[in-house]
Amino acid sequence: MNRSDLIQLLADRFSQLTQKDAEAAVSTILDTMNNALVRGHRIEIRGFGSFTVIHRAPRLGRNPRSGAAVDIPERRQAHFKVGKALREAVKLPAGDVDQGQPK
Image (cartoon, rainbow, N blue to C red):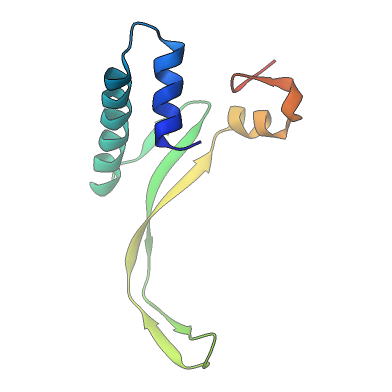
């Protein structure tokens, strides 16, 4: 599923939302999550998972082609940890899941 699929799903599921309203809702949610992660905040959505920013220390890596040493700088990286409910739902066979919710 991509962003446009999500927008279409919202517009179809909630008839009071126009395509433009659904697009604004999805954009607002994703932009807010993006801004929170940029500021270093943690995002937790119960039953789905949590997003955090992890710090990667600088290290020495290797070029796989030549074997030469390469300095890898420090960086921040977004990390997602799946929630228990989603983890359990994914374990179920595909036929046992309805609209993303376990039966």
